[in-house]
Amino acid sequence: MRNKNAFTLIEVLIVVIIMAVLAATIIPQFSESTRNAKESSLKFNLHTIRSQIEMYKAHHASKVPTSATTFAAQMTGKTKIDGTLDPNGDYGPYIQGDIPENPFNSHNAIVAVATDGTEPTAVVTGNYGWQYDKSTGDFYPNNTEWYQ
Image 1 (spheres, rainbow, N blue to C red):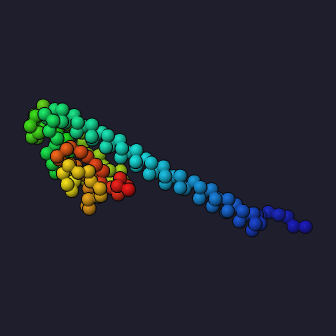
Image 2 (image 1 turned 120 degrees about the horizontal axis):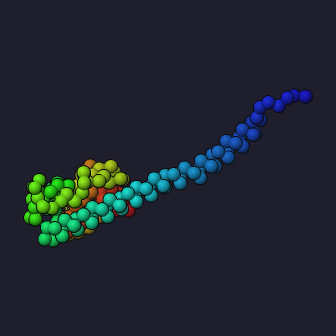
Image 3 (image 1 turned 90 degrees about the horizontal axis):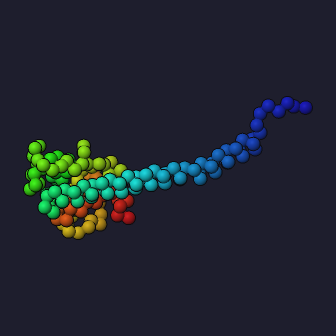
């Protein structure tokens, strides 16, 4: 008569299989929750920036920031009614700090849309987080997930 002090090979295999099944069901939920968090953050950033563009328009006689290259400065600095930057300007800043990053690509640089007045249909190559249309003031994310 032997004294049983260890697990048998069958018992160990059963435990490993149970752990594999649990991992296969739990891990995809974590990756999906990460994507959902990024989508939520992206939508929040878009809503915030778009509402601040509307406030800029209200203060600047329905004009929007003049270009993608000056967008960040005009939204984060003080401006005069004509939109020129002035530390003693009456308007702004509309965004405190810096332009938020696009959570999908971790960039906050802004590039002009390919065609003014037309909603973009694809990502602009480069380290850009956002696309901006200076003719309408429309603001879009620059990541492939948005255009799928």
